[in-house]
Image (tube, rainbow, N blue to C red):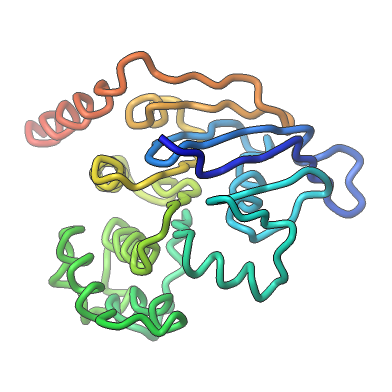
Length: 244
């Protein structure tokens, strides 16, 4: 596998901050990996994700994604980078309430003027098991359905990297497991995924690599010995839900 993300000696200190949100973090993520970043609230894990997405800039150090140094990009170039190379899934969906599910999915594609965007959007909704909600507004969708729409929106421009910040945090256990199964399926198809979570069980169940962050530093970086355990656990979870 080739290197997709490289963070070199990253420090991030917010204005007026005495301590850094990140302190000397170095990290690489390979193309095709499913990596989970764990840590308690305030540990720096979401800051890490925002830097990789180009939503924030480090105080010092460098961030490179797909060979591009984000620190050398203008704000306009960063906006294009996020549009073309990165898909972002948030905890609270961030769907526009006055647009249908399909229209929400199409937003990034319209910014890029992607051809055949509607066909791809409908295909994604179908692949995620919610083709029937295409013309419904977010208020008429369950939390799990809204998160699937958000995932489809993140995937519409075929990003190199999918970033997921606590994507199950606003969901019940059943819906959360279904969303994680969808992410696992995307990973099997070759999608690189970087997942932020505070849930150790979720991280070790699905990800093949788990990075632990505490007080702005990486304190552990473990590659699971049996990556197929994730797939086996997905099957087990399905069986448990069927028996309920």
